[in-house]
Image 1 (tube, rainbow, N blue to C red):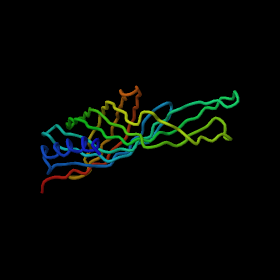
Image 2 (cartoon, helix red, strand yellow):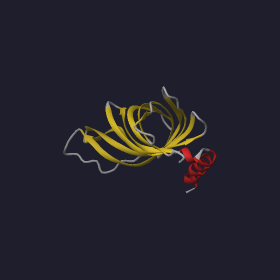
Image 3 (tube, rainbow, N blue to C red):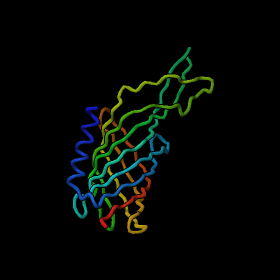
Image 4 (tube, one colour):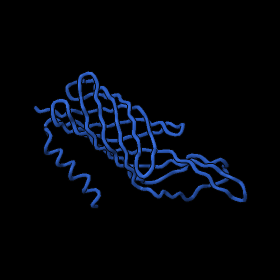
Length: 186
């Protein structure tokens, strides 16, 4: 509970400082490349304006990461892949212009479960998988372009990179798009 408050209290303070009449929020769908796989990521994002070209960007995303492993039974080695599931909260600064948008900041990843992706022998079943590090911390950057559909909706194609720095190193790179609703003052 304390960790959740540590994230949401600063978010609320940023919301109070920003121009609440010009919030934008949306849904994002993207894919990440990791270990020769393309993995999905979906989520909701919120942009809080700080100035004409500056925004605080956050959200809540569901992300899948692939991890592989091996084990031995009677001198036979079995290789398996699991899909690790994470909830990701990015806390980013976004510079917006008519040409391109640049976002960079940190992300907090919380491990929420796993599922078997593949096993080298179909007769072997993986019943248990343990992850020691349930919290991951990283840095993230993205380039996007806002394409207005009308006064309130825009679509943002993007490319992004996320680098885990604690407790281990890992890199995800991907592309996607967001459908954004721009709340404007009436």
